Image (cartoon, rainbow over all chains, first blue to last red; front, side):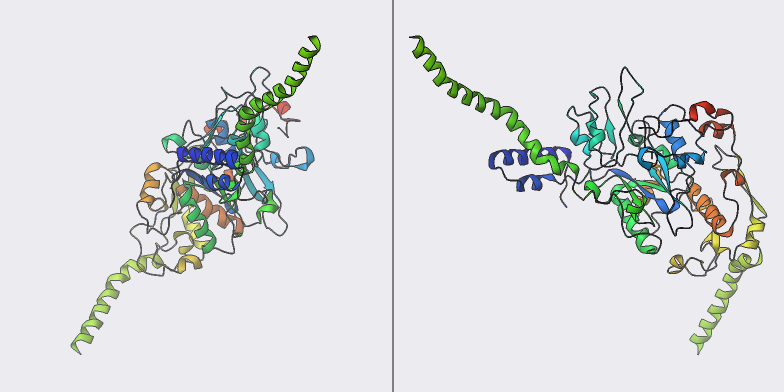
Length: 307
Length: 177
């Protein structure tokens, strides 16, 4: 098995970038890509078949992260009926890093509940898109955000394939991006599971090493093939995510984007990004040269006319 | 012949030995009530009417899997576990950990690559899945406070009761960004 650490990943990326700049092919860029995540990073397996929609996870997140009081009590099921513009269910906000959504699935005896939060991608699009490096993927698996360097461009919000980062529009002085950090500061870095995982009465979420969770997920499917669709959402989507999902309903029926592909978002922009340094360094010199050459004639002519 | 006699004798002795182990599982139905309170935090302890539940369950194995000596009712479990000796303990907490995702527990699981039940739920998960799962199919109570009343700490945690947000702030803030 090939082991990658961040250094070799970056080195590979640089080598790939240099190769493109020199030869202009895209093959090397693809070869340099697959980081595949830190080998011992942690993750969470969410078994949607077990969620009863009690919203205890939302309350736990609110308290752990010191978020402002909610608009409605955390035991109020009326939030499930709230709709955003376009009839979409509620999403993560600056005040709620995780929300539970309800789906009435035809033919299913009970509604299906889906917990939404940052999926903590192996190769996050938010991190890729951020030009001030405000994002960081920790070896433990969390995707962290540093508000002190953020310039508020909100490109990460556009880049995220799961529409997770929220923005504190309510703050006029210092608005920042707000999202789930997998309780890194207070729990994950001390080897503890995120607050939502620990609070869940149904143990919908299983916390562990991502590679172990994958084995567990496939074991569950093979033990009860009638109880699950044969897919672990997040195993391969956008290069793999730390949070993964099991469901008894096809994922596209319950709001999951099943057309994201297996490539990390960075793969789509790598060729372009490799060209950026070339544009910034070679082009100015090159075109200044052209400009001087073409102007030289005029300058000479002018001098001739003068004399 | 002698060998055969010995085998028969041995089998009889074995039956005599195992009989008292198996028999209580059939003969008595365990405690009348169980106070489930080791995890009580936001809710009060549950006074579980064990006697009533033995009357409605088809078998002890419905809840106790294979530990009471009866064959498990779940066909997935029955692939490996069959009727046999009663386990040393039949209490939920003796198999289901109350600190399921702690570093110690995860390390313990990691040390045993052969372990099959790597995803065994913790104590809280085991209680809720078993109780709520059956209550849903059998028409039992399914509300949180049907089994355990929420305490003041719980009200604060859920921003409910006297900690509920003022109703005026709840209008028109459904969407968010």
